[in-house]
Image (tube, rainbow, N blue to C red):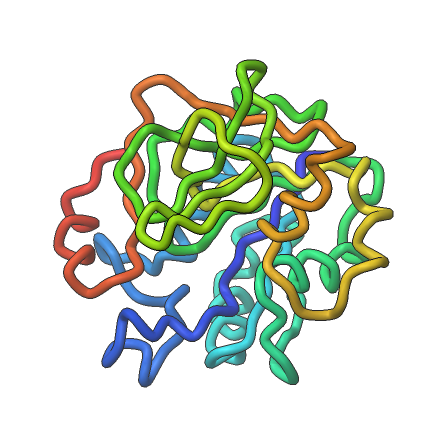
Length: 230
């Protein structure tokens, strides 16, 4: 079974004042909510089960999916209304909603891209990356294996330095790592987990050719998103 999780629980503070009345996932782009764009992309790639985590204006997302009859998919809700769990905690909480034997594609709700999801390898943990300008870079060795992280503004380094690539907000969580989550708290960033796990587990970069990606996290990116072609 092809399964995925959409991170839709965030507060969307960078999209205020729009997110004073709606969740980021329902902010419209091209006449449809961001959530619709990600779901349609997953559906077109053959994903059957999708888990959506919710927190900010959670009921609006739940109602939206219900009105659209889950778009003909097996869509499940991971409810974080009591506490926002960050990316790692969100995956940990949602795991029981998935088939434990299959990889999980993780996709931020505010990411638009031309990435062909049908070509993503799923035999090991995978981070979709690209060569683009950002403040924080993942570090990879010559075999494209994750070895560290670097903040170029502060100079902070976690792990070791290597080839710098920017994370896309899309990754594959592999069941081979699931048992490690029990050692982590309820709330934590998934990248901290990956940086800890990469010392003993292979977590690779996936750098697709000609990747076009847009983070629709700020108001000034909405106009650009309206012109984005998939």
